[in-house]
Image (cartoon, rainbow, N blue to C red; front, side, top):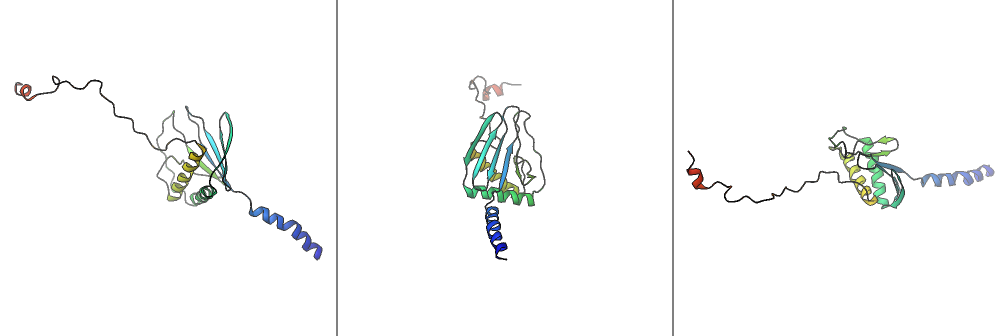
Amino acid sequence: MKYQAFLFVLFALPAIALASTRLDGGVIENSRSTNTAGYTIKVWSNGHALLTSQGSPGKAFTIDETLALKFLADAKAARANPGTASHCMKSASFGTTTMVTWHEWASPDLQCPPFSPQVGMLANETRAIQSAAGVGAPLHRIALPIEQRRFPPTPSMSPTPESEQSRP
């Protein structure tokens, strides 16, 4: 009996300790488009992350462990309540999709709102991680500047009260 207890302590307790420190992780994937390369960000619960892009070596970086844990908790919550999937119009050349994969679950495209509140939180954490990695385009349209006229209108081009009175 003492021998069995010894074996239990020898083998079971280290296994339990290792299981409790097991890392969780999720993946952010941004698809490629005609004009941009796609990328993948792997995020682990301890704050370590790895950015890989097509045609370039991986770049390891770290994020705050609190952000990593919030990202994974938001992925779990979004999986439980994904809301309704939506589709949005995107450019054929510049349009990409951003999705999160967690425990074999894939999120809807995080660039196509409206979201459930849980998916919205996941989108926020995803943008924060993309920013920390130094990637990601703004997920909103950028207004173009107003076109400037080359020549201001001259007084002869604008109607005057006299010219309007002389009309039949």
